[in-house]
Amino acid sequence: MESKQDNKLGQKIKELRNKLGLSQDEFARKADVTYTTLTKIETGVIKKPSVFVIIKIAKTLGITIDELVK
Image (cartoon, rainbow, N blue to C red; front, side, top):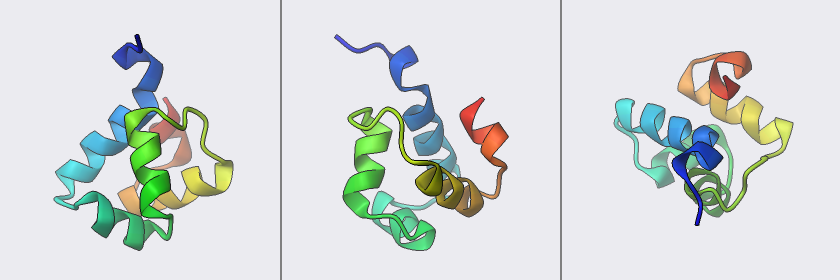
């Protein structure tokens, strides 16, 4: 079974997205990533998204890549 520790990145993205008041669909559109990619990252199906996806997500969240991956 997967622990929350295994999906820290996905949990952090979800938490920050919720703080912005955006649904997964709204956020995916703003970040220019597919909805399925976003949901897979948040749920831990994708554990190591590409750097290009990370850049788009961090930019949309208004934080640096370093802040996102720490």
